[in-house]
Amino acid sequence: MRDRSRATTTLAAPPDPTADEALQRARTAMDAETRHLMDGIGRALCSIEPTLSMREVTRLAYAGRAATDTHGFGTPRAVAATGLLLRHMPRVDSPSATAPVTRAEYGMQLIRKARS
Image (cartoon, rainbow, N blue to C red):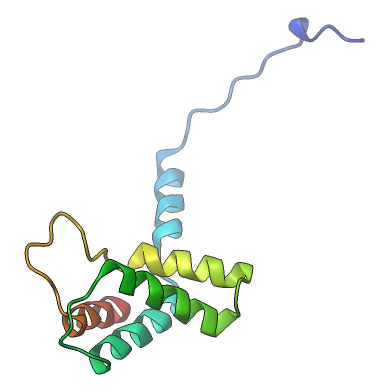
């Protein structure tokens, strides 16, 4: 048996800041499927009860439903798509929100974000 305490040690190279930035951009980039789903959610919010107040639970439900309709119930791809949608859909109950937003206003925000 080899004595591990006497093994040679190797030092890791210092982290490359440009690689970290590129990885972060790749993680947060919106892909075409997410843009398509977000656009569809925005259009639905503008057409179904547009004057009601937008709630956080509505945001969660629409993201889950859009992903499930596309990839099937409980599939790993549906879970991943839901996570991507929720990452890019702004929260409704954020502390920066001053007044309640309607479903139509929030839907227009999503459509603009999906097209940018």
